[in-house]
Length: 95
Image 1: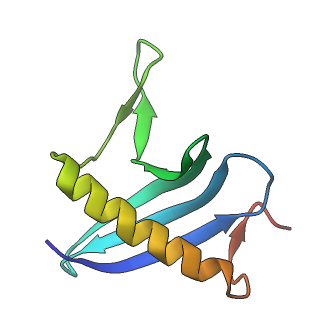
Image 2 (image 1 turned 45 degrees about the horizontal axis):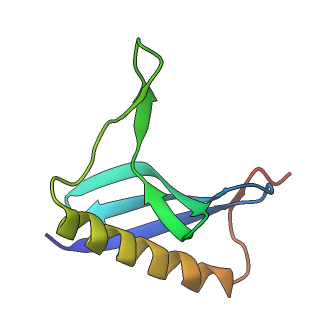
Image 3 (image 1 turned 30 degrees about the vertical axis):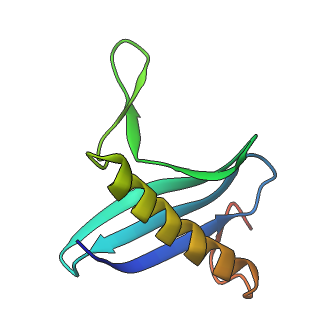
């Protein structure tokens, strides 16, 4: 499995949510709405989720093992860091 594209949309508002990301896997499969979040120990990703009937949020798509999660997170956070040095193209929440 190769991540062949990463698209980062930075969030303009102050807060823990820093960006929303879409990744393409093997030029064949896309996962949208991965969040880059600033936590107490630094940046991390949250997979796309939806609210269940019991009020809890459950991931819609997620890696099966920790190695794959780490590879996805490292790739996304690397691309996010690159975008911090660039001019903002499309920033969510900016009017």
